[in-house]
Image 1 (cartoon, helix red, strand yellow):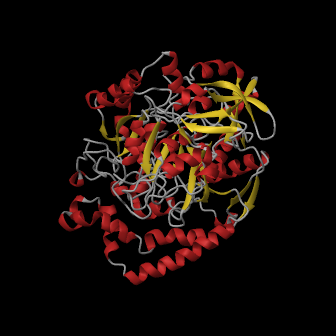
Image 2: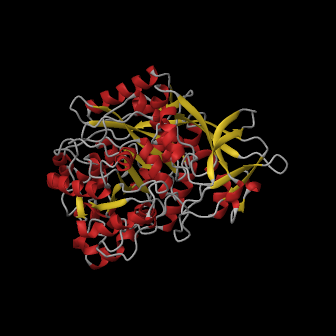
Image 3: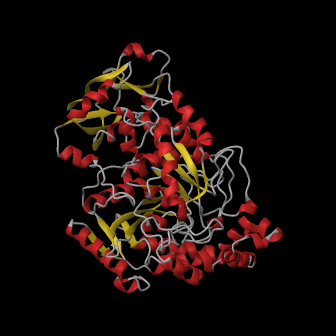
Length: 601
């Protein structure tokens, strides 16, 4: 049976009572037996191991837990409490007492772990064959590679064994498997997601990445997974949160950079070359302006990752095992990592100087563009081809990906086509750091221009929020707090087909309070013409047919009334009864729920 495993689809099934999280998890375990030959798992959780997380759902409110009952998979270099972490090397294995910070945040939001996924050993590879647990096979054709190193993470989602998964991405491991398995692959800004509880590959470059079936889910998971972590020396605050925590429709003019024909490389894969050309043609037909840039500085930066001194970081990550039991390391991984002990400090500093110059050159190429677009990979190899040429072909997979973290950029891999062989193809959108949600919004637009079935099961996507609003009457609704785009309760709007229409301010006649209670804190906006000020708000267009169920779920002392905007319009929106302010903290001085949340981090 084809099951739509998107987050909003499962939420709808839970809300109407047609399914339960326990039933979904049992169904996943049963269907996983059909794919045992794909080598997806290092550890598929048993019903007994999973039960504590299912039991914990009883104490969580689906209305305030955006991932309530949603199944997810974890790459096996990321810790899950009391389940062994192997990093693809049994001799390295250890059993953590606590989950990685990102994993714990997802569990706190209601997500349920399904298992630990196969990977290229020590996350060293882009192909998925470098594992003692066997090469992971493509979700569409088992003769082809899955992509790596986050191989099992991608294939599990593509085959409907999870709604989303965590991978990692140092050189492309969160994007190449997405391309090869018809998924969205988000490589967040470095440091946006905590690396506490992650086995490092190149610690200064590593990112935990996200695989999903569509961009809506990627945005939902990102909102739950991100956050500063003082225990992680590479963690970063999103300094541009007000401008980049914005995911939604992207209908305005777009200028996107592309590579000149002479700099494209498909390594003999004419099917991928044709799919790329068809993708560009469709984007141009949709009115998107494509601008040629020079890829030279990006390519030079990419070569530094393995040809420069950064391979020393991979040596550091494996050093104890290299010294004590080198034979335990996969021979190809060992051949790559062992020379990492050779670079001199002078080589590192020279490379850093050159890298800084290259970053400036790349940013200059992207000046005036909304993003850069490249093929995610130039060729999809068969497993036997990759095993015959493991280093050369793997290197070719990184032609469009290896520069990303060295240049401190972010990216989203998005599926756009199937080849004449029926194999997935996709492109990657590239932007400077903290452009994560802007790129997701552009990717969302592309999936509307080039709609594809979800994953490998042929499930048709649900209508987007934009499509729902275009096909029905809708009502404008003003929100000011936890329902804002990217915040914990925003899913209650998006699951109903609502779309973000405007970001604006209220009239200068309101006071803002953080109400007592939780766990998701809620604001109260109270009209006070004498002492009030303008408050940052969003206007969402909600299908009128869905408005009743939304309003019915609003708890006291909140309600829906009329809110005056800065332009003088009065629209329906959230208001708060004065009697509900007991124990509340006044935060009017911030003028924004987001700014108040940021100062509390």
